[in-house]
Image (cartoon, rainbow, N blue to C red; front, top):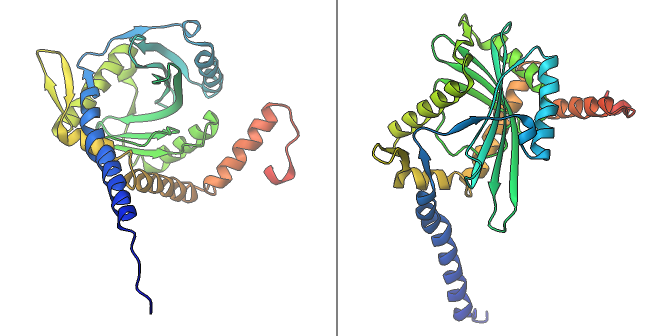
Amino acid sequence: MGAIHVNWPDVVGLAVIAGVSFFLRYIYAPLKIRGTQTREREPRYASVELTQLSPEVSWKFTQAASQLVALSFTAVHATRQDPKRRQNSAVSLWVNRSARDSAQVIAVTTATHTGGERRAMLVTFRTEFGDRSTIVTTNAHSPRVFPPNPTVDTVICSDLYDVTLLYQLHCARVARDAAGRTATVESLRDGIAYLCNEHTETFQRLIKAGYYVEDARAGRYLATYRGAFLMTYRYLWPWKQINLILRQRKAERLLQELGFGGLEAMLVRQRSAALAAAGAPVPPVLR
């Protein structure tokens, strides 16, 4: 057998590239992100009319609103955080008092480094119970960077943008899993107070988990080193991919258990509903 020739300069070069890439992603990025992960202790929410939002966001809010009204929801409040922030959000709160469910329509706008904007839109249905436990059904896309709240049972169907189908799934979950608990919407009497309380409760939980500390003098929550590293890693391989797989498996299992036929069956119903709403013929395969 001939001797194996190793091109050591190439090996060393690849090792250096891999080492630098690992350092930038898994060491430098969390340290940099820690400096950006500060949050106000008392967020500044302001009431807003949909016409004050960008045309794209306003149009999406209006679309969701028409479906929520058809589902017996009424608007509670529309608000947004300081629009001067690099990342700001607009939230529309809704309540179905007969079913004791609430809904949030959220648009998050983030300024990019190139001067543009990136927008994300999601709808979340919530049923809160008197014992402070909650059932949540949402179509959020972003990976979760915070540890799960043990009092909240969340199912995420990222591709299910049809509000009516998403609410059907939520109602089926509540009907099966309420287990004698009594739902309540009393906390939604004041929209801004509700969001402020939600903000405070979230960060008090994250402080207990070691992700943040409170700087009382500055009136801010500051990310800890532990929190910065864990939040960053949840966005990186392999944790991001693992969490997304687990999220999809949970949604698939639940849809099967509740008789919806799985994610693919729900997406077929969604495409069929979209075609019907547009007045287009629905192919037999989608019926």
